[in-house]
Amino acid sequence: MTTTSIRAVLFLAAASLVASQSPALADVLFSSDGSDSGIYVNSWVDYSGTVFGTGTGCTSESSNPFMVNGVSQGSYIAATSYPLAFLSTPAIASAQGIWVGFLMRPIAPDTWAGGISLFSDTFLPADPRTMQFAGLAGWWGNSMNLTLAGPDGGMASGGYSIADGQDVAVLAHLYDTGNSGIFNTGDLYIDANLTDGISFGTPLISDFTLGDAVSTIASVRLGADPVNPEIRDYDNIVVSTTEQEAIDGLNGVAPVPEPATLALASLGGLSLLLFRRRK
Image (cartoon, rainbow, N blue to C red; front, side, top):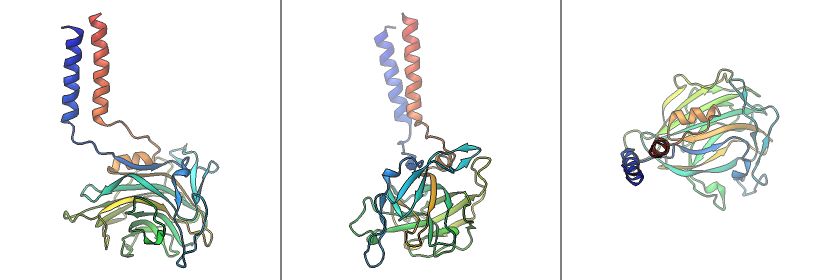
């Protein structure tokens, strides 16, 4: 067989492998490791329309980093003024849904908000008060109780009461049950011990109904009210279509290549080996 023939066979094999893969999903829709505060914009105004905070509303820090399984996660986000960022691709409601994970440490105790709020908006409107709220993994109202809330403002009972200065990992699963076309259900997981790596057991909250649910989720906002003032530290924020990718992100693991990409890489190595044998 000639070199040209070998290349043709390998090309066809590669095409067949790629075609046999199910349509590739971008598993990770958003990630932020604390070194990228520039991706956030300030989105907070009070009810009179006064804008609070300037710039991105967050800073990168390197002191007192989050530690996961004894490994420093490096710089983190010290959030103020509710900084907002956008997903690379808006998530459409499905049974698979999305997984939202983040590390968090509240600095000021017993203050208004903490955790991550989700919105449908793909850009920051002139008046952020008009943004379409999609849900919350965290708290508001001075409770410091990590729970879930839906767009109707209803909060799930139960959850986890976080202490001032405590590091926790949060994982929320938002999904569509009954082919409704909206993110109508949520589960919440908490890991309060980061010393042995992050893993989750059964959810603290399961099958919570998200009232007034939305069909898309396209942006995330970090809870931190500027009025008190308060600070929330965040790290390893990830929004993914798979649970494993979300947990990997929480553990500080970079996403792996898609299966089709790996298949092509393997075929490339095989091509080189055959070419060397031919010579």
